Image 1: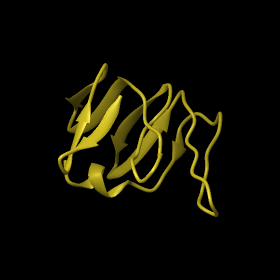
Image 2 (image 1 turned 90 degrees about the horizontal axis):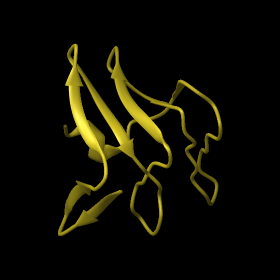
Image 3 (image 1 turned 60 degrees about the vertical axis):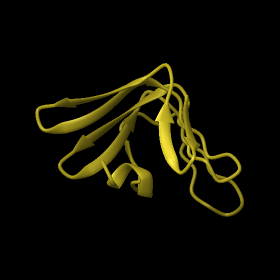
Image 4 (image 1 turned 180 degrees about the vertical axis):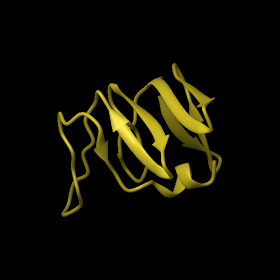
Length: 84
C-alpha cells in the first residue's frame, strides 16, 4: 500500500520498476482517501508519456472522475507520480 508519510509517498507490498524506459508499479494498491492516493488491485505503467492503469479500478468521489473495471484505461497522472 502506498501512503504519504512526512511529505513522502511510500509503497508497501509493491514495487516500482523501469522497463524499456517506462515506469511500472506492480503488486500495489492505490486509493484516494482523506487526501491520499491509493490504487486497488492493479498496475500502473508509463506508456508514451502517459500513465496507464491495468487490471484494477480507480475511483474518486465528490464530483471527480472514477474508473471501475476497465482494463488499460488512460488516467490523468497524479502529481506524486509525475515527480518520478
